[in-house]
Image (tube, rainbow, N blue to C red; front, side, top):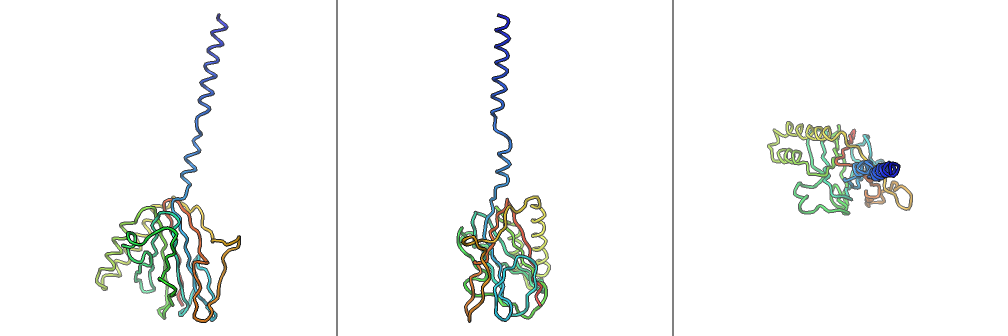
Length: 231
């Protein structure tokens, strides 16, 4: 009888240990934490040189007056994308969305949004200097940034320089706040295994900048700043 009782106790411990070993490993939530909830395609191209060859802009670069630029945004996930431009004289332009109200009227996944709209490109004028482009994406609308943009565009031109500095500071503050979040993937789109290449302008035709788009996926926040040395 004594041996039977001891055997029963040992079997009970073994059963408890076996069941506890079947519990889910804590690694599963880590996979969810690294899952992208921001996704969009972004293209930034320029027509350069005498032949107006289209090149991809992914980092700080130099362009000359008369050369042309264009961008494209296509959402692949529900997120909010902003493109803010600071010109050589400190002026601010909201390139995308075209206006803040667009978030309620025309803002859908899998649609190409061009900057500027249509097939036109933006030709760099003769005002040389630094042209800075801020690309920011978030899972939530950046309401403080939107308010500062609204204040800027409704203000008297004599007060806009100070308000422009507030906008740039807000972008930097948001970027600092989300500094712990890294981009999960950023890569050129491909067709048939080949990276989409460059193109040349034939006559007055302008190429589709979407053919040089980059696919961007991130967690909670994404930010990129590109400076054009406009000469």
